Length: 123
Image (cartoon, rainbow, N blue to C red):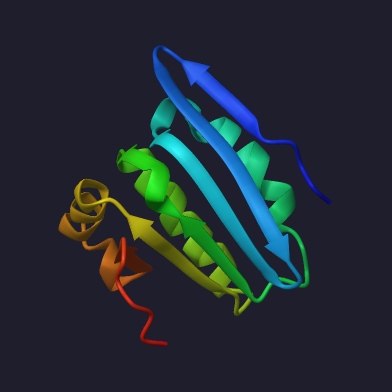
C-alpha cells in the first residue's frame, strides 16, 4: 500500500514525509524537523507502513532532517523497539553533522544504528 506524501505545517515548523519500498526494504525520507508538534502526524503516516509483515529492513534517510528534539528521539527509539521485536533491521543514515551530534550526545548510537552522511556501511 502506497501512501501519498504528507506535509505537516504547524507554527513555522514543517515536516514532509515520503517513502520508497522495494520488496522487503522500506526507506523513509523525512524532511524538516522531527519534533513534538509533528509527532502525531508522523506516527499516522508510518504506522500502516510498519505494520507490513514482509519487512526485513527499515531505513530512515536523515539527509534532509534539520532538527530532532527529544520527542523525535523517542520516536526513533520506539521504531527501533517495535522493529527489533520483529527481527527487522533499523537504521538512521545520512544524517547532517548537527543532527548526528545531537543523537550521539544522547547516546542513541549505543542503541540504534545511526550514521552521519557519507559514513560507510560496515555490516
